[in-house]
Length: 253
Ligand code: HEC
Ligand code: HEC
Image 1 (tube, rainbow, N blue to C red):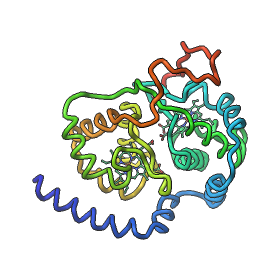
Image 2 (image 1 turned 180 degrees about the vertical axis):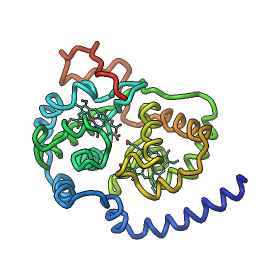
Image 3 (image 1 turned 135 degrees about the vertical axis):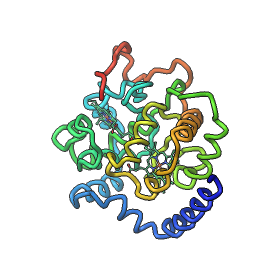
């Protein structure tokens, strides 16, 4: 069984390699569901010179209540850590939320043109968020089967997400190392079952035959990888020293 699946995967990887060669078509695929005005917005935001001070202001006004003053989200919930995410990925995700390609009404309203603004504001807030260090205390999932998780990761994920889950700027593949386990699992399930419409089609194919056991192992492994921009223990964002740290956002579905 394992052998056949392996062979199957090998073929998929060969197919994948040829696909990767045509990066233009990847770009087209990634934005298949994106209306032209959002695509334009994304491309514009990528090219603009960001203003970090304005990004800090926007973060405080529109993001801090849910993602927290450090941008670390909440372990064990649906609120992701966004600190340290690649700038290009944040820009794409914001454009996708605006375009309705990700099924999340709260993010959609907070990232809308009416609240956040246009491409310049997207570029500003993305630059600020990506400059924040990551949490040393993310939700890491399980300690069991981390080696199995690594094997699966190296075989099925590393090509796109990078050797250590650091992501890929050019292809806007998210950094997933050190993310909360709970969030990784949630997104992975949504990507697999099609609820996350912006998902990478190749990734969806590759993960269809994973068992729950394999999924738990690989996600725990990814959550355990320590990013190189982790904040020191006890770090607080000096930009928001006075923010009430007992803060918790509302529970979400
Ligand atoms: C009302 C709560 C709320 C606010 C305000 C909010 N977010 Fe979010 N954000 C969420 C939730 C919940 C998710 C997870 C969505 C999902 O599961 O699809 C999310 C997801 C994201 C993601 C995708 C993360 C990933 O790794 O896929 C990014 C990027 C993001 N938010 C950035 C921002 C920025 C920038 C702002 C401010 C402009 C902001 N958010 C404001 C709740 C919020
Ligand atoms: C063919 C390339 C490819 C492969 C292979 C792949 N991914 Fe992905 N993955 C992506 C892209 C691209 C995205 C972002 C899609 C988007 O724009 O929302 C993504 C998104 C994700 C997300 C959501 C991250 C976030 O911050 O929202 C998780 C979790 C994830 N991948 C885990 C995995 C794991 C685990 C594997 C291996 C089992 C894997 N991926 C294999 C390309 C890939």
